[in-house]
Image (cartoon, rainbow, N blue to C red):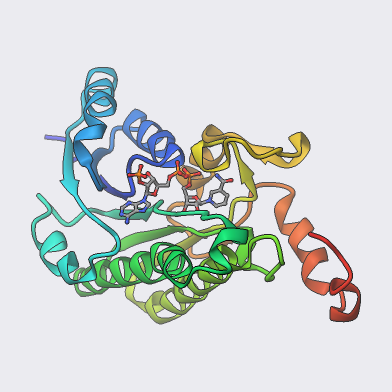
Length: 244
Ligand SMILES: NC(=O)c1ccc[n+]([C@@H]2O[C@H](COP(=O)([O-])OP(=O)(O)OC[C@H]3O[C@@H](n4cnc5c(N)ncnc54)[C@H](OP(=O)(O)O)[C@@H]3O)[C@@H](O)[C@H]2O)c1
């Protein structure tokens, strides 16, 4: 009998996550989909099962409730080969600057929760001696900018966490992939004016994730590595005067 591999997708209602689910399902992977208010995934689940004839399980998960994470991992129908976290929250920079609770929510959603949960799963992968951890972080974490530094600083923390995890697990046959999208057309960016030339769709991101999922590296959709390289080397005296 053919053994199908399994991918756990955390934050499975995200538009990028749904595209990743379709990509892996089309390649024969079984899916474990974790989300808050997970019954909202019913239509997506039926579609995936009908199209690809794979197994799909759904679990309830709130990324802010770290005290539930150990039980969450224990209750999975199997320890997956791959775990991807797509949870994220952009927030509203201007409003969040004057709200400690809003800022805290953005920081915990983008940094604390995803890091703690992927860290817990990584420990299980390390014990087993195999697995792939994938984090969807953001180019916003590469350098703090006035327009989105609350979200960006949380993504920066997540990127650093994944980098350290990758470094630690290098010898344990567990790979850690960090994906740093620039702009992607999803519900997170709806209402924003996105520059066409450097904006991706969810299919492009899901293809990158699939192609690179066994690698231990940081990937950017083209041309964001080069854009961020330039942004990172701008001297602070000039950067202070820019509106980015
Ligand atoms: N779109 C972009 O331009 C872009 C760029 C760079 C990086 N990214 C990152 O890519 C990832 C996916 O983004 P996306 O564009 O697909 O966004 P999205 O469609 O808005 O998805 C974000 C998901 O996070 C979930 N979430 C938020 N708080 C949660 C919580 N407390 N517990 C569980 N789930 C929670 C949301 O759940 P609900 O559906 O219940 O609200 C939503 O499904 C995010 O990490 C994002 O930061 C996106």
